[in-house]
Length: 152
Image (cartoon, rainbow, N blue to C red; front, side, top):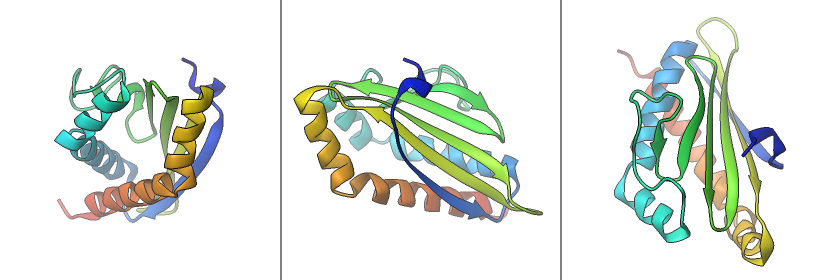
């Protein structure tokens, strides 16, 4: 699956009072924490995701996986691109880290996905139409911000 071929859905961003390397560590740690818990694995199995448990190299690198996602690109301090697929959707989540002044980094999260067929359209309405995706992305970015701004 080519990430660029997936339709653009949305983008969420936050500015973090930390250098890009600290934001990278916070992003990877929060993704591991959020998606490696039991509920994520259960959900991934229910929807028939390709990846249903953590695997591959750690810290996150190309080929790493956790429930629902596989790492396509891991460029520390710059970009982390994830892809996934299940019976209702093929999708990608691309995180980009950009300088935003001294000691500050802008973290952007771009979502792309295709929802084939009637079941895919219903799933899109459920996840995006309900606002659930936006709430989840805002929570994830806030958690990354907190983890990245912590001293030490």
